[in-house]
Image 1 (cartoon, protein in one colour):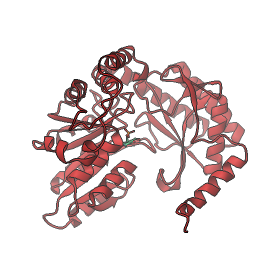
Image 2 (cartoon, protein in one colour):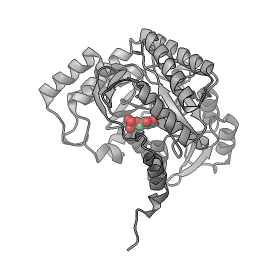
Image 3 (cartoon, protein in one colour):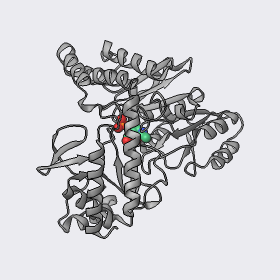
Image 4 (cartoon, helix red, strand yellow):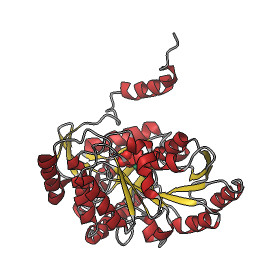
Length: 399
Ligand SMILES: Cc1ncc(COP(=O)(O)O)c(C=O)c1O
Protein backbone atom coordinates (compact mmCIF):
# COMPACT_ATOMS: atom_id res chain seq x y z
CA UNK A 1 0.00 0.00 0.00
CA UNK A 2 1.41 3.40 -0.88
CA UNK A 3 1.28 5.91 1.95
CA UNK A 4 -0.66 8.94 0.77
CA UNK A 5 0.96 10.95 3.56
CA UNK A 6 4.51 10.57 2.21
CA UNK A 7 4.10 13.84 0.30
CA UNK A 8 4.18 15.63 3.68
CA UNK A 9 7.47 14.08 4.84
CA UNK A 10 9.63 17.15 4.19
CA UNK A 11 7.24 19.39 6.11
CA UNK A 12 7.01 16.88 8.99
CA UNK A 13 10.83 16.74 9.21
CA UNK A 14 11.14 20.56 9.15
CA UNK A 15 8.54 20.91 11.88
CA UNK A 16 10.04 18.18 14.05
CA UNK A 17 13.47 19.74 13.65
CA UNK A 18 12.20 23.09 14.93
CA UNK A 19 10.14 21.66 17.78
CA UNK A 20 12.89 19.25 18.97
CA UNK A 21 14.84 22.30 20.14
CA UNK A 22 12.05 22.81 22.70
CA UNK A 23 10.48 25.82 21.05
CA UNK A 24 6.74 26.58 21.27
CA UNK A 25 4.80 25.55 18.17
CA UNK A 26 3.97 28.87 16.44
CA UNK A 27 0.98 27.29 14.69
CA UNK A 28 -0.62 25.75 17.76
CA UNK A 29 -1.01 28.56 20.27
CA UNK A 30 -4.01 28.39 22.60
CA UNK A 31 -5.69 31.57 23.86
CA UNK A 32 -6.75 30.60 27.38
CA UNK A 33 -8.78 33.76 27.89
CA UNK A 34 -9.46 36.76 25.68
CA UNK A 35 -9.93 39.92 27.71
CA UNK A 36 -10.39 42.50 24.97
CA UNK A 37 -9.59 43.00 21.27
CA UNK A 38 -5.98 43.71 22.26
CA UNK A 39 -5.20 41.45 25.25
CA UNK A 40 -5.42 37.70 25.87
CA UNK A 41 -3.96 35.19 28.31
CA UNK A 42 -1.60 32.74 26.59
CA UNK A 43 0.49 30.21 28.54
CA UNK A 44 -0.86 31.83 31.71
CA UNK A 45 0.57 35.21 30.71
CA UNK A 46 -0.95 38.56 29.72
CA UNK A 47 -0.27 38.87 26.00
CA UNK A 48 -0.83 41.87 23.74
CA UNK A 49 -2.51 40.79 20.51
CA UNK A 50 -0.83 42.10 17.39
CA UNK A 51 -1.78 39.40 14.93
CA UNK A 52 -5.55 39.00 14.91
CA UNK A 53 -6.75 41.20 11.97
CA UNK A 54 -9.29 42.60 14.41
CA UNK A 55 -8.62 46.00 12.82
CA UNK A 56 -11.58 47.92 14.23
CA UNK A 57 -11.73 46.06 17.54
CA UNK A 58 -15.40 45.17 17.15
CA UNK A 59 -15.22 41.77 18.90
CA UNK A 60 -16.01 43.26 22.32
CA UNK A 61 -18.26 46.12 21.22
CA UNK A 62 -21.18 46.12 23.71
CA UNK A 63 -23.83 46.70 21.00
CA UNK A 64 -22.42 43.90 18.87
CA UNK A 65 -22.41 41.48 21.79
CA UNK A 66 -25.94 42.47 22.84
CA UNK A 67 -27.24 41.88 19.30
CA UNK A 68 -25.66 38.42 19.24
CA UNK A 69 -27.14 37.47 22.62
CA UNK A 70 -30.60 38.66 21.63
CA UNK A 71 -30.52 36.68 18.38
CA UNK A 72 -29.33 33.59 20.24
CA UNK A 73 -32.32 33.90 22.59
CA UNK A 74 -34.85 34.65 19.87
CA UNK A 75 -33.70 32.41 17.02
CA UNK A 76 -31.64 29.64 18.61
CA UNK A 77 -28.05 28.55 18.09
CA UNK A 78 -28.08 27.64 14.39
CA UNK A 79 -30.17 27.49 11.22
CA UNK A 80 -29.35 23.87 10.35
CA UNK A 81 -29.90 24.69 6.72
CA UNK A 82 -28.78 26.17 3.44
CA UNK A 83 -29.67 29.72 2.51
CA UNK A 84 -31.90 28.38 -0.28
CA UNK A 85 -33.87 26.06 2.02
CA UNK A 86 -34.52 26.76 5.69
CA UNK A 87 -31.37 28.83 6.31
CA UNK A 88 -32.50 32.36 5.47
CA UNK A 89 -33.78 34.19 8.56
CA UNK A 90 -34.67 37.86 8.85
CA UNK A 91 -31.17 38.35 10.29
CA UNK A 92 -29.49 37.16 7.08
CA UNK A 93 -31.55 39.61 5.06
CA UNK A 94 -30.84 42.39 7.60
CA UNK A 95 -27.13 41.65 7.29
CA UNK A 96 -27.33 41.89 3.49
CA UNK A 97 -29.26 45.17 3.83
CA UNK A 98 -26.52 46.54 6.11
CA UNK A 99 -23.89 45.58 3.52
CA UNK A 100 -25.86 47.21 0.66
CA UNK A 101 -26.05 50.39 2.69
CA UNK A 102 -22.42 50.23 3.80
CA UNK A 103 -21.20 49.94 0.20
CA UNK A 104 -24.08 51.89 -1.43
CA UNK A 105 -24.57 48.95 -3.82
CA UNK A 106 -27.66 47.21 -5.16
CA UNK A 107 -26.92 43.62 -4.19
CA UNK A 108 -25.27 41.74 -1.33
CA UNK A 109 -24.89 38.03 -0.79
CA UNK A 110 -23.66 36.64 2.54
CA UNK A 111 -21.61 33.43 2.64
CA UNK A 112 -20.50 31.36 5.61
CA UNK A 113 -16.86 32.54 5.26
CA UNK A 114 -14.81 34.89 3.08
CA UNK A 115 -13.05 31.82 1.73
CA UNK A 116 -16.38 30.51 0.47
CA UNK A 117 -17.30 33.92 -0.98
CA UNK A 118 -14.23 33.87 -3.22
CA UNK A 119 -14.61 30.18 -3.97
CA UNK A 120 -18.28 30.64 -4.86
CA UNK A 121 -18.29 33.87 -6.81
CA UNK A 122 -15.14 33.23 -8.84
CA UNK A 123 -15.97 29.62 -9.70
CA UNK A 124 -19.53 30.51 -10.68
CA UNK A 125 -18.90 33.52 -12.89
CA UNK A 126 -15.72 32.30 -14.62
CA UNK A 127 -15.97 28.83 -16.19
CA UNK A 128 -13.94 26.57 -18.45
CA UNK A 129 -13.64 28.86 -21.47
CA UNK A 130 -13.21 32.08 -19.49
CA UNK A 131 -9.93 33.74 -18.50
CA UNK A 132 -9.04 34.91 -15.01
CA UNK A 133 -6.16 37.37 -14.92
CA UNK A 134 -4.92 37.64 -11.36
CA UNK A 135 -2.09 39.03 -9.26
CA UNK A 136 0.36 36.22 -8.54
CA UNK A 137 0.25 37.01 -4.81
CA UNK A 138 -3.51 36.43 -4.59
CA UNK A 139 -5.01 34.75 -1.53
CA UNK A 140 -5.45 30.95 -1.56
CA UNK A 141 -9.25 31.31 -1.67
CA UNK A 142 -8.93 33.18 -4.99
CA UNK A 143 -6.73 30.48 -6.50
CA UNK A 144 -9.08 27.80 -5.21
CA UNK A 145 -12.06 29.61 -6.76
CA UNK A 146 -10.23 29.72 -10.11
CA UNK A 147 -9.42 26.01 -9.89
CA UNK A 148 -12.96 25.04 -8.91
CA UNK A 149 -14.47 26.86 -11.89
CA UNK A 150 -11.86 25.35 -14.21
CA UNK A 151 -11.15 28.72 -15.82
CA UNK A 152 -7.93 29.54 -17.68
CA UNK A 153 -5.66 31.14 -15.06
CA UNK A 154 -3.28 33.90 -16.17
CA UNK A 155 -1.19 35.26 -13.27
CA UNK A 156 0.77 38.51 -13.54
CA UNK A 157 3.62 39.96 -11.46
CA UNK A 158 2.50 41.47 -8.17
CA UNK A 159 1.06 44.97 -8.54
CA UNK A 160 2.56 45.34 -12.05
CA UNK A 161 0.17 47.40 -14.19
CA UNK A 162 2.06 46.79 -17.45
CA UNK A 163 2.17 43.04 -16.87
CA UNK A 164 -1.60 43.03 -16.30
CA UNK A 165 -2.15 44.95 -19.54
CA UNK A 166 0.10 42.58 -21.51
CA UNK A 167 -1.74 39.51 -20.20
CA UNK A 168 -5.12 41.08 -20.97
CA UNK A 169 -4.10 41.78 -24.57
CA UNK A 170 -3.08 38.14 -25.05
CA UNK A 171 -6.51 36.75 -24.11
CA UNK A 172 -8.23 35.39 -27.27
CA UNK A 173 -10.75 37.71 -28.87
CA UNK A 174 -14.29 37.26 -27.57
CA UNK A 175 -13.33 35.21 -24.47
CA UNK A 176 -14.84 36.12 -21.07
CA UNK A 177 -12.32 37.98 -18.89
CA UNK A 178 -12.28 38.48 -15.14
CA UNK A 179 -9.50 40.46 -13.46
CA UNK A 180 -9.08 39.59 -9.78
CA UNK A 181 -7.28 42.02 -7.48
CA UNK A 182 -6.96 42.65 -3.75
CA UNK A 183 -7.13 46.06 -2.08
CA UNK A 184 -4.52 45.25 0.56
CA UNK A 185 -2.19 42.28 0.15
CA UNK A 186 -2.07 40.70 3.57
CA UNK A 187 1.44 39.27 3.55
CA UNK A 188 3.35 42.55 3.15
CA UNK A 189 0.50 44.94 3.93
CA UNK A 190 0.92 46.80 0.63
CA UNK A 191 -1.99 48.20 -1.38
CA UNK A 192 -2.77 47.73 -5.08
CA UNK A 193 -2.73 50.53 -7.67
CA UNK A 194 -6.41 49.83 -8.26
CA UNK A 195 -7.09 53.05 -10.14
CA UNK A 196 -4.67 52.20 -12.92
CA UNK A 197 -5.37 48.48 -12.89
CA UNK A 198 -9.11 48.89 -13.12
CA UNK A 199 -8.72 51.43 -15.97
CA UNK A 200 -6.55 48.95 -17.90
CA UNK A 201 -8.99 46.10 -17.20
CA UNK A 202 -12.01 48.07 -18.37
CA UNK A 203 -10.19 49.34 -21.48
CA UNK A 204 -9.60 45.69 -22.37
CA UNK A 205 -13.18 44.56 -21.79
CA UNK A 206 -12.70 42.68 -18.51
CA UNK A 207 -14.96 42.50 -15.48
CA UNK A 208 -13.20 43.30 -12.19
CA UNK A 209 -13.45 41.62 -8.80
CA UNK A 210 -11.64 43.20 -5.83
CA UNK A 211 -11.13 41.38 -2.56
CA UNK A 212 -11.19 44.06 0.15
CA UNK A 213 -10.82 41.64 3.10
CA UNK A 214 -8.04 43.66 4.73
CA UNK A 215 -9.30 47.17 3.97
CA UNK A 216 -13.01 47.05 4.80
CA UNK A 217 -13.88 49.25 7.76
CA UNK A 218 -10.53 51.02 7.77
CA UNK A 219 -9.41 52.32 4.35
CA UNK A 220 -11.46 54.89 2.41
CA UNK A 221 -13.57 57.76 3.69
CA UNK A 222 -16.45 55.41 4.58
CA UNK A 223 -14.30 52.36 5.18
CA UNK A 224 -15.34 50.78 1.89
CA UNK A 225 -11.77 49.91 1.00
CA UNK A 226 -8.93 50.78 -1.33
CA UNK A 227 -11.26 51.13 -4.35
CA UNK A 228 -13.10 53.86 -2.46
CA UNK A 229 -9.87 55.55 -1.35
CA UNK A 230 -8.66 55.64 -4.98
CA UNK A 231 -12.04 56.89 -6.29
CA UNK A 232 -12.81 53.85 -8.47
CA UNK A 233 -15.37 51.89 -6.47
CA UNK A 234 -18.07 52.52 -9.11
CA UNK A 235 -15.95 50.71 -11.70
CA UNK A 236 -15.62 47.53 -9.64
CA UNK A 237 -18.06 44.78 -10.67
CA UNK A 238 -17.74 42.64 -7.54
CA UNK A 239 -16.34 43.39 -4.10
CA UNK A 240 -15.54 40.42 -1.89
CA UNK A 241 -15.13 40.80 1.84
CA UNK A 242 -15.08 38.97 5.12
CA UNK A 243 -16.61 39.38 8.58
CA UNK A 244 -13.53 37.78 10.15
CA UNK A 245 -11.42 40.93 10.21
CA UNK A 246 -12.82 44.46 10.76
CA UNK A 247 -16.37 43.21 11.31
CA UNK A 248 -15.14 41.05 14.19
CA UNK A 249 -17.07 37.81 13.69
CA UNK A 250 -17.15 35.17 10.95
CA UNK A 251 -18.68 35.13 7.46
CA UNK A 252 -18.06 36.42 3.96
CA UNK A 253 -19.86 38.40 1.31
CA UNK A 254 -20.01 39.77 -2.19
CA UNK A 255 -21.58 43.12 -3.12
CA UNK A 256 -22.30 44.23 -6.67
CA UNK A 257 -24.41 46.46 -8.89
CA UNK A 258 -24.67 43.84 -11.63
CA UNK A 259 -28.35 43.67 -12.70
CA UNK A 260 -28.35 39.85 -12.91
CA UNK A 261 -26.51 39.33 -9.61
CA UNK A 262 -29.39 37.66 -7.73
CA UNK A 263 -29.30 34.58 -9.99
CA UNK A 264 -26.08 33.61 -8.22
CA UNK A 265 -28.14 32.53 -5.21
CA UNK A 266 -29.37 29.57 -7.27
CA UNK A 267 -26.22 28.57 -9.11
CA UNK A 268 -23.34 29.23 -6.70
CA UNK A 269 -22.45 25.90 -5.11
CA UNK A 270 -20.56 27.19 -1.99
CA UNK A 271 -23.68 29.27 -1.24
CA UNK A 272 -26.26 26.56 -1.95
CA UNK A 273 -24.59 23.43 -0.60
CA UNK A 274 -23.62 24.52 2.89
CA UNK A 275 -25.38 25.64 6.05
CA UNK A 276 -25.96 29.36 6.56
CA UNK A 277 -24.41 31.38 9.37
CA UNK A 278 -26.01 31.12 12.84
CA UNK A 279 -28.51 33.90 13.65
CA UNK A 280 -26.26 35.26 16.42
CA UNK A 281 -23.40 35.66 13.93
CA UNK A 282 -25.40 37.58 11.31
CA UNK A 283 -26.85 39.77 14.08
CA UNK A 284 -23.36 40.65 15.35
CA UNK A 285 -22.17 41.24 11.77
CA UNK A 286 -25.08 43.54 10.86
CA UNK A 287 -24.66 45.58 14.06
CA UNK A 288 -20.92 45.84 13.55
CA UNK A 289 -21.24 46.87 9.88
CA UNK A 290 -23.71 49.62 10.79
CA UNK A 291 -21.36 50.91 13.49
CA UNK A 292 -18.43 50.85 11.06
CA UNK A 293 -20.34 53.36 8.91
CA UNK A 294 -19.65 55.85 11.71
CA UNK A 295 -16.11 54.73 12.48
CA UNK A 296 -14.18 57.80 11.27
CA UNK A 297 -12.51 58.46 14.65
CA UNK A 298 -11.46 54.85 15.01
CA UNK A 299 -10.09 54.87 11.46
CA UNK A 300 -8.00 57.97 12.25
CA UNK A 301 -6.62 56.38 15.44
CA UNK A 302 -5.77 53.16 13.59
CA UNK A 303 -3.77 55.15 11.01
CA UNK A 304 -1.89 56.81 13.90
CA UNK A 305 -1.09 53.40 15.39
CA UNK A 306 0.07 52.06 12.04
CA UNK A 307 2.36 55.03 11.41
CA UNK A 308 3.77 54.91 14.93
CA UNK A 309 4.57 51.19 14.82
CA UNK A 310 6.05 51.39 11.32
CA UNK A 311 8.34 54.30 12.23
CA UNK A 312 9.35 52.70 15.55
CA UNK A 313 10.24 49.34 14.03
CA UNK A 314 12.29 50.99 11.30
CA UNK A 315 14.12 53.04 13.89
CA UNK A 316 14.99 49.84 15.76
CA UNK A 317 16.59 48.52 12.58
CA UNK A 318 14.02 45.98 11.35
CA UNK A 319 13.41 45.49 7.64
CA UNK A 320 9.75 46.03 6.80
CA UNK A 321 7.51 44.91 3.94
CA UNK A 322 6.71 48.47 2.82
CA UNK A 323 8.68 51.74 2.91
CA UNK A 324 5.65 53.60 4.24
CA UNK A 325 2.71 52.25 6.22
CA UNK A 326 -0.02 51.53 3.65
CA UNK A 327 -2.52 49.59 5.76
CA UNK A 328 -2.98 48.21 9.29
CA UNK A 329 -0.60 45.34 8.48
CA UNK A 330 3.11 45.80 9.07
CA UNK A 331 5.29 42.91 7.99
CA UNK A 332 8.73 42.45 9.56
CA UNK A 333 11.01 40.52 7.20
CA UNK A 334 13.10 37.84 8.92
CA UNK A 335 16.34 36.46 7.45
CA UNK A 336 15.14 32.81 7.57
CA UNK A 337 12.61 30.49 9.20
CA UNK A 338 14.88 29.59 12.15
CA UNK A 339 15.48 33.23 13.07
CA UNK A 340 11.82 34.05 12.42
CA UNK A 341 10.62 31.25 14.69
CA UNK A 342 13.12 32.25 17.41
CA UNK A 343 12.00 35.88 17.21
CA UNK A 344 8.32 34.83 17.27
CA UNK A 345 8.93 32.83 20.45
CA UNK A 346 10.99 35.59 22.07
CA UNK A 347 8.14 38.04 21.41
CA UNK A 348 5.64 35.62 22.95
CA UNK A 349 7.85 35.34 26.03
CA UNK A 350 7.87 39.14 26.20
CA UNK A 351 4.04 39.03 26.09
CA UNK A 352 3.33 39.83 22.44
CA UNK A 353 1.51 37.74 19.86
CA UNK A 354 2.23 38.30 16.15
CA UNK A 355 1.74 35.98 13.15
CA UNK A 356 4.65 33.94 11.87
CA UNK A 357 4.23 33.46 8.12
CA UNK A 358 6.33 31.22 5.92
CA UNK A 359 6.30 29.88 2.35
CA UNK A 360 4.17 28.88 0.50
CA UNK A 361 1.84 31.54 2.00
CA UNK A 362 4.47 34.28 1.64
CA UNK A 363 5.85 35.83 -1.56
CA UNK A 364 9.47 35.29 -2.66
CA UNK A 365 10.11 32.57 -0.03
CA UNK A 366 10.09 35.13 2.77
CA UNK A 367 9.67 34.43 6.47
CA UNK A 368 7.61 37.21 7.99
CA UNK A 369 6.41 38.37 11.35
CA UNK A 370 3.12 39.96 10.45
CA UNK A 371 1.72 42.57 12.76
CA UNK A 372 -1.89 43.68 12.42
CA UNK A 373 -2.89 46.73 14.40
CA UNK A 374 -6.22 47.40 16.04
CA UNK A 375 -8.07 50.68 16.51
CA UNK A 376 -8.34 49.68 20.18
CA UNK A 377 -4.55 49.57 20.70
CA UNK A 378 -3.66 52.58 22.82
CA UNK A 379 -0.62 54.76 22.12
CA UNK A 380 0.94 53.30 25.29
CA UNK A 381 0.39 49.76 24.02
CA UNK A 382 2.16 50.63 20.76
CA UNK A 383 5.12 51.91 22.79
CA UNK A 384 5.05 48.73 24.89
CA UNK A 385 5.03 46.67 21.67
CA UNK A 386 8.09 48.54 20.39
CA UNK A 387 9.90 47.82 23.68
CA UNK A 388 9.13 44.13 23.26
CA UNK A 389 10.45 44.12 19.68
CA UNK A 390 13.64 45.83 20.87
CA UNK A 391 14.21 43.24 23.64
CA UNK A 392 13.32 40.20 21.50
CA UNK A 393 15.31 41.53 18.53
CA UNK A 394 18.45 41.93 20.63
CA UNK A 395 18.00 38.57 22.39
CA UNK A 396 17.78 36.73 19.06
CA UNK A 397 20.37 38.78 17.20
CA UNK A 398 17.81 40.07 14.70
CA UNK A 399 18.88 43.67 15.33
C1 LIG B 1 -7.51 38.39 1.01
C2 LIG B 1 -8.36 37.41 1.74
N1 LIG B 1 -9.50 36.98 1.17
C3 LIG B 1 -10.30 36.10 1.81
C4 LIG B 1 -9.99 35.60 3.06
C5 LIG B 1 -10.88 34.57 3.69
O1 LIG B 1 -11.63 35.13 4.73
P1 LIG B 1 -12.34 34.23 5.83
O2 LIG B 1 -11.46 34.22 7.03
O3 LIG B 1 -13.64 34.91 6.09
O4 LIG B 1 -12.54 32.86 5.27
C6 LIG B 1 -8.85 36.04 3.70
C7 LIG B 1 -8.52 35.54 5.04
O5 LIG B 1 -7.45 35.46 5.49
C8 LIG B 1 -8.00 36.96 3.02
O6 LIG B 1 -6.86 37.37 3.58
